[in-house]
Image 1: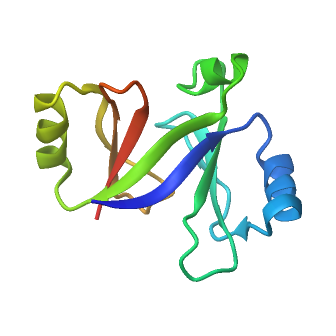
Image 2: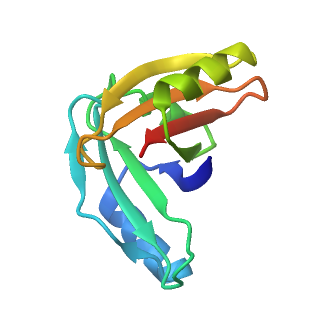
Image 3: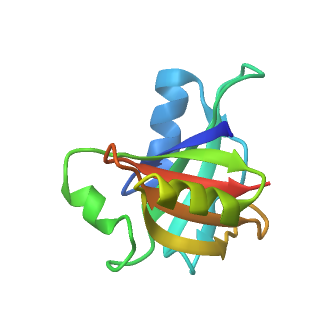
Length: 132
């Protein structure tokens, strides 16, 4: 399992892109994508280094978006995403070790239809699984 990206929730994608460029030199490496299934708008940004771990900026598309509640709190770090070979096997492993499945596998627009799923770990943080 390899760390793929870190997800950060924002209320304004364009402003977040600008701030990350000014502060860290991060620039978009994908287009901004609206994902109606996930009810979010997303973009991947990364630094100029070849081994830079990307950041996924995530903004809600509607009030019932899964990330809307996060914006009401103080924290904006949303999840760590790991690249996995077999998402079903990974979910079984997480579940057998006490994790709660937040969302079953669905396709994601940003990742060209690859499947993603979310789990809540026993250590109380969210992990996204992205199938290779």
